[in-house]
Image 1: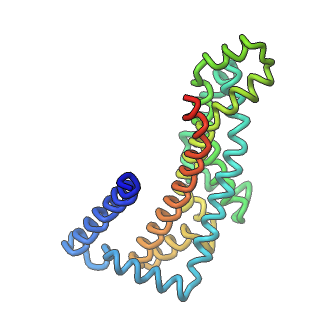
Image 2 (image 1 turned 45 degrees about the vertical axis):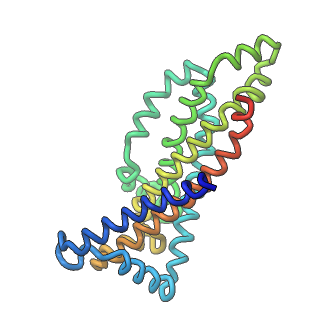
Image 3 (image 1 turned 180 degrees about the vertical axis):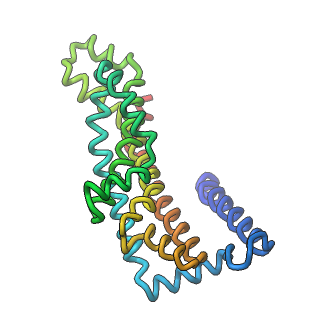
Length: 254
């Protein structure tokens, strides 16, 4: 019971301190009037937008875009990560290339994306897929390459074929690293969402923030940021629960 309470109260206390600090800054008039709305004012404008302007549609579109970006980017990164981890010459050949592209911010590629893919939905999704792929592939292949060799040696000593070694030893041991890669990709995709929705998006949380900023609606800018944070937190916690269940058998073995 104490452990359950601590898991609830400690995170809640962190958010409580954050809200308290927000109120202090808002009431201290550190910034010019209208540039620091209070949390209750942000909550009010969000409630109004949900009731009057179909803000749920923007939330749904952004969540869907992030899910597609993470799913597609991680699906591409998974076989690439296994190949780079399994074949050291390939890793030595392509690791600098991956590091080069991973360092490029997706927002810097927007002009090229518009030239080649236009301003439609595929252009926005390509930015998110790019971000997810390069965020997850490094985690995946570095994690697989660092697996304890004792398991591989034991399987080989027992006469396992190359396919049995890969499918029955490497893949199960790599599941935690794959999930960590997906979790990293999820965070990067949410961080990239606003940049992706700069490409002529009419709906979505990034588009909502941009529209609010254009009309100097600071309370709605804060509201969009808060919604992105809430969506990212919920999805991250859900993935963390999946990770906990997926690696439970490894804990029992250990």
